Length: 416
Image 1 (cartoon, rainbow, N blue to C red):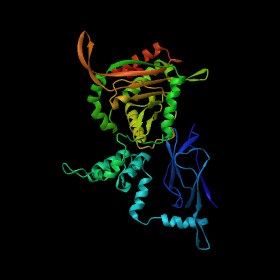
Image 2 (cartoon, rainbow, N blue to C red):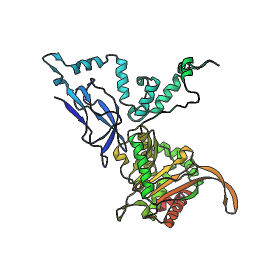
Image 3 (cartoon, rainbow, N blue to C red):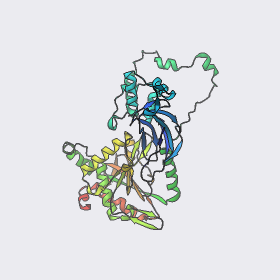
Image 4 (cartoon, helix red, strand yellow):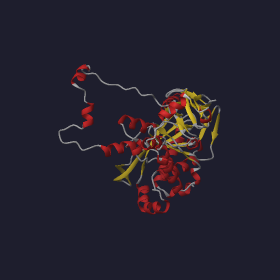
C-alpha cells in the first residue's frame, strides 16, 4: 500500500503551481510533518509535508514542472507496510543507507527546512553548512542576507599582493586558459520562478487592457519631518515601532479616496464596483519579486497600528512567510521607490485596482515660497490611474489632496 502526496488547495483564485526544490529524495525515510517539497505559486510559496511516516519511494514531479490542484507529486510507503515477516524491502534499505546518524548532518537538515530557496542555492554554491547559520527571518528562517553575512565573516584577510586561496582555485590552469576562446563571454540560464512569470504577465496585461496614465506633483515634507522629530522618540517608546513616513501617506490616501471614490473602485465587466472600505496594499521588494501585502480596514487603524502592521508584513515578505490572506484583495496600492533611491518613476497599476501612488526619495531643493527662494525637503509623487474610470481632473485633485494632507498633517484629523 502506498500513500499519494498530491498538490493541496492553494488558496483563493490560485489553481496552479510550479514544483520548487525537493527537501527529500527517493529512498529517504520521512516522518509526519516533514517538508517534502516547496511549490511556487503566483503569490506565495507553499510547503507540502508528509502525511504519514514511511519511505519516499517515488517522486513523480520534478523541479520546474507546472502542476495543478490534485496532481500526484510523490508516493510514500508507510512504515507498517515497508516490512513484512522481518524482511527489509529495497526501499527501506535505501532509506537506512540514506539515514545519517551524524548529529551535525541532522542539524543541517533541520536548518534546511527553514531556509528560503534563494538562500539554499547560495549556500550550496558556496559550500556553506546551514547548521552554522542563525536565521533572522520569521520563525528563524534563513534568508539570503544571513548566508551573505556568514560568508563575509568567514573571509580571511589575504596578505598584500597574494590572491586568496579560493581565488587561486578558481583560476584556470594554463591548459584551461589556452582552451578558452579569446574574447568569449560567459552566459547563464536560470529558470524564471512562477511568481516572476506571473509578474511579467500581469504587467503586460495591464498595459494592454487598462488606459493607464500618470500625473505628478511634489510635496514639501517639512511638516511631517518636524512632527516625526518632535514625537518620534515618545511614539516608539509607547508603541515599540518607529513613526515612519508610510503611515502618514496611508492616512492621506484614505482622506483622498473618501473625497474621490472612483479611485477606490474597480471595473467588473460593464459595472463599476465602489468599495466602501479601505484595504491599502503596501508594495514590498522581496527576494524573488515585488509583493503587495494588504493593510485591511486601514481607515479604522491608528498611526501606531498601521506602522506595526506594515513592519510585520514587511518582515514576513522578506522572510518568505506571507500567507495568501496577507495578499488577498486590496483597494488601492502605495509603493515607495524612494527607499531604493528613486527620484521619479511611473508606477504600474495593480489590477483590478484603478489607482496606485508612487513615493520617491526626499531631496533638498530650492522652491519659491511667499516670494522668496527657500530650500525645502521635497518629494515627487506619482499617481497612475485607469483613465477608463478616473478622469484627469479627479486624478489631479486626488493627488493635490494627498499633498495638502502631508504638508498640513492636522488636515488628516479633519479627513477622518
